[in-house]
Image (cartoon, rainbow over all chains, first blue to last red; front, side, top):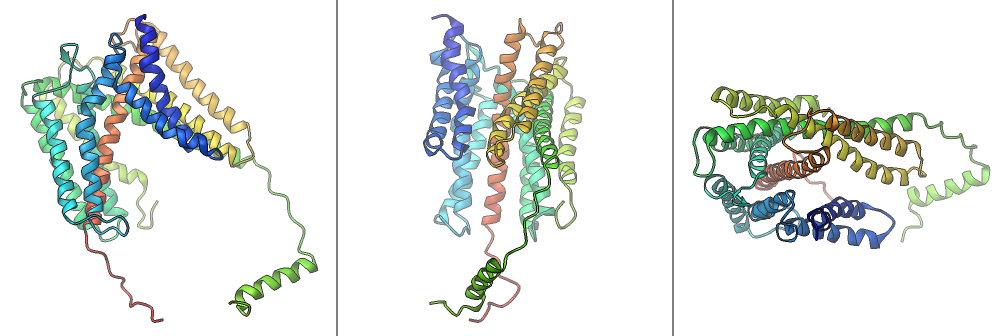
Length: 264
Length: 153
């Protein structure tokens, strides 16, 4: 099989299944389509992750290899968050209190796992460091700093009496800044030099800005198109006033509800 | 704007400030080869906009379902997506304006899409982690008591 055909079949086709599956899962009015949507998206992700074996000649398969390499720590982080949230004071689905501590331990292990990958064992693709690893890690660190700052700000301004949570989020933000960024920016690791990491951070800034601005622009245009359409809609036609029979019927219903005489 | 009078723009001040400080710090410490930074920015912007508009076009079908299936917003969004695609193809085919070590326009386009997948997954992982942490901090607090007495039955 030619390289481009195998890439098309085993990478791009499953890749396209992911947004298609999500779209189908949101479709209303057809339960069958809704039900197959999410499995289709998951299947697509699995096939993309398997692309280093199914389409090894394609350069794009490096991204599948990266997703597979980070799946472990990222799933651990997600599981840790789940335990930490539901081990607390939640009204439904509460787990035993020990789950909360276990969740934080899982989060710390997940972060340490990623840091270890940066420090010692980055994903290896074609006998070299995966070309997307530097981008992923740098964008992750920058996004973690920005999102923790944003959430701390939100907890402070939107939340009511959330000072403690704000301080904890500021602590998380500073931890990422100090440990993740500044430490890695200054110290050469066994896998990557500090200068290379600084370069990755700079390029990640460009990626992050571009992606976020482009995405927000698309959302803004979506909102503008809808607003323009709604503004151009004609005023709804005025309805005739109620007839005497209708008024009597309304009065009857109101009496039933407000009066409560017929309640059993 | 929420009831305390803070707008979205004010909420974005801290993250943007943090990003700026980190990048300035990065610049002071010294960088390697970053001549492709503008190309990375432009490619990320155009790809994110075009694919984002495509996704919004999909969302527009749901909107149309709730509004007696009007055609004009669908056409409007289709035009916005088409515009993004044309801009991207033009920029990619114009000399080596946006080519980053890829031999052809098609290769650069596919590389951009893969890059967007990588960047988006990193953003989602980081944001998800912090949102989860904030939720866990909130759920970790003892339940609040109401400032008024319970209603007598």
